Length: 503
Image (tube, rainbow, N blue to C red; front, side, top):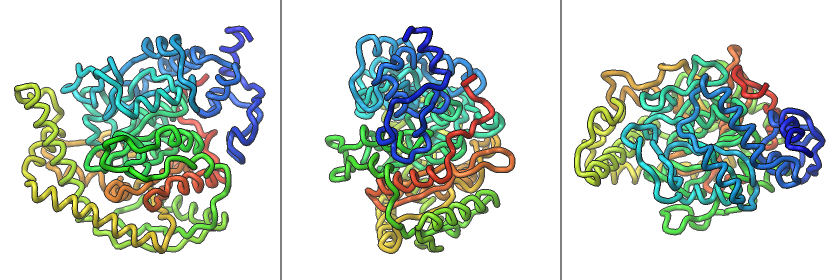
């Protein structure tokens, strides 16, 4: 096949030689024909493995698509295309995703020789001296990293809006939020630039952007993947268009990071196999009563419809709630996030020998730092103890139920500006505004449980709506297996947003 023919092939249908088993038994993508538009990362890797296309050609397609939509969406933070081309020329490791183009989130991750700005002017010139562990695992999986994605300053917002990197716009509706803090990654995948991108979740930052952009987003069990931050609340993984991509990526990322405070003894395999067969009959609690927030009628309808589908698939669904005190949970989360933000920024100032200036941080972050400095060590210790108590409470609940079904967010993607920081906000007013939308996700960052956003439908206005399933600690494979079953019965892969990078 000539180079010209191969490039043409990227945009045209072709006969796949990959077996149903390799593609994932029963997968919505297990078809005889596919194109870059419909291919997931697993498909792209199979194309490379059989010589149907080269990593350079995939990179060419991804960068062409990026340049087509980035001016509209502002999804990219850092451009590493030159480094990606060098990596391809040197030869890529053999892994499950060899040759697949990939983007890192510009937060909580280091790649040698590149800037990680964390969405802030404070780190606009912070060049990493080495790769972080999760970057090494991404590279060992064979991924071709060609940039970093937009994120709000230090991931402290539920929407990817900020002064330093600018607002990231939702490809489904440019007037609406992508969610945060993994909004740039979600926009890139939703718009078809790449099929999978790095994301992190400290309060819903994988799951909320996934549901606002019509994607799958798994927040893994605490410690299952490297790079956990924020008192153990934040974990790293990816946003994807297919369940099997999420499962295969988890196979590549999972495993205890030496010296980490969490994750020892967790299962590190079996995630992909769980997606190739229907799960056993599960007992699922549907919980729309906790927390007590106003749920959009279309979101409520979607959750109830998904409950009916789960019952039709043979599962038991019962209304039940664990009795979590969400007012206290929100106080605990605010204490931990604000105090850790203040502590870390104080360390930055001490390390460089002079104070952080007003121009180096956004007003939101200055406010969180000021309020975080007011917490005592005893306040933080009490908050950590409460976090553990929430985990024990949910462990008790999971003695009765295998999984919990809830909304991901109380509403579809809100308009830009609706949940951002406003002049005069304090910690309570700011967080209460966005937690009215993301109230359901925070519990699972407190407890460390795995939780997944699964695309389900769209609103009358055309915005995606997802559902959230959560399992007991270490139950990641079960979540992926159930998500794959839903994917087979309610496929979402052919839904296209308004802004699509393909022709």
